[in-house]
Amino acid sequence: MKLHPSEAAFLTDLAESRASWARTASDSLANADLAWSDHPEAWAKLSSLLNTQEAQVAFTTAVSELLSGLIHSALVTLDGGSALAETTLLTISDQDGHEFKDFLHEFWPEVDGDAA
Image (cartoon, rainbow, N blue to C red; front, side):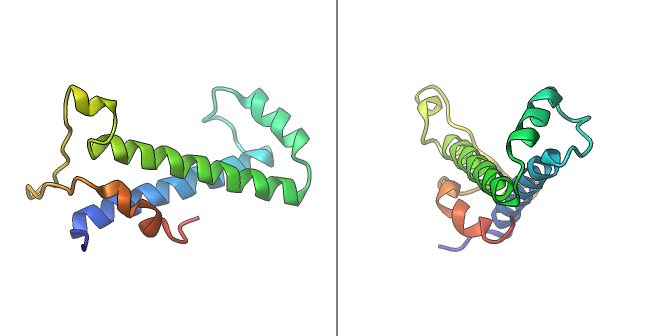
C-alpha cells in the first residue's frame, strides 16, 4: 500500500529529526556547543571515554538505533498498538482533513532509509 504524500512527509520529517539528533550526539563528543543539554558533564565524560574514531562511530550508530526505536514506539502508540489503546485511540490528520493510516509504524524503517 502506498503512503499519502502527507504521511510520507511526516515520516520523512521524523527521519530527518532522528538524523539531526544523532549528528548532535556525535558532535557533542567533540565538545561542540552543549547549550541544549541539561547534562553537559555527561557529554564530557562520554567524550573522554569515547576517544577513538571507531568508538565515536559506534556510539553514533547506537544513538541512531535507539532514536529509531523510540520513533517506532511512538508510531505504534499513534497507530493504536500500545496500552494507550485500551483507554483511547489517537488520530492524525493533515490540514486538508486526510486521516493518516493506522499502521504508519510499518513504514518507519523503509522511509528512514539513508537519512543518517
